[in-house]
Length: 263
Image (tube, rainbow, N blue to C red; front, top):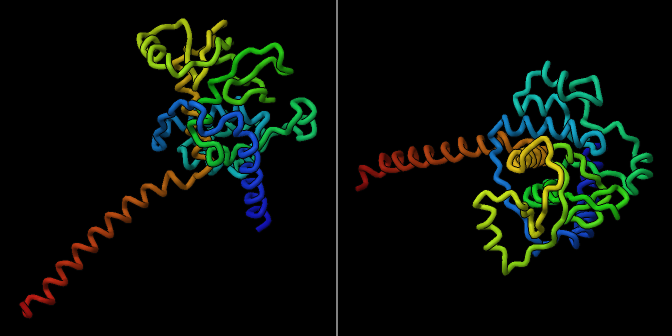
């Protein structure tokens, strides 16, 4: 009961934080659409790997358990122990960060939030755009900034994968069509994320297309964390609808049998 109460409080707090920070990313802000397939276990497994390797050092997902994630995503337990369990030794432990909250607040100015419900609060399109919108900013204490969430305290944890971007400015809606057509022709002069245009100053380990795919995988995993039951809920829904249709057919045949002599 105590755990449930804590979860409710955490969700409410996340909603309050979301409403206060949405000035940096309101409904009128351009977001990139992320295409997710929640039945794609390979995508979710890659998202889990990225989360553990790049996010869990600062952010926790303390309402998810390692063994539940392994079961849902069909990850063998020996691979779970070898590749995903860096902050604990027990398979049934919660996915907590090892960074003390006091140290995190001193280093970043704010305690990094728990990410279990971030996809329920922020929505997948926002997360996908945010993860790809970091750029180099020497005026920032961390040396990084984000075009979707200006002056965010978080540094770019995955800059080795994406590389270093320079913000070229916001995209005017009047030139959006021409820019999209230019990008569709395979131009590597710049990339557009949300309503911002970036130049890739130093390439990373991944190409821009590969990084976009990786961030879609990470977004899918965070979406899964917000509602693990959805992987089975949709399957159960299909069977339930099929059962209701079959029952209706049987009821109709039964009705015809009862009323046959009357007619």
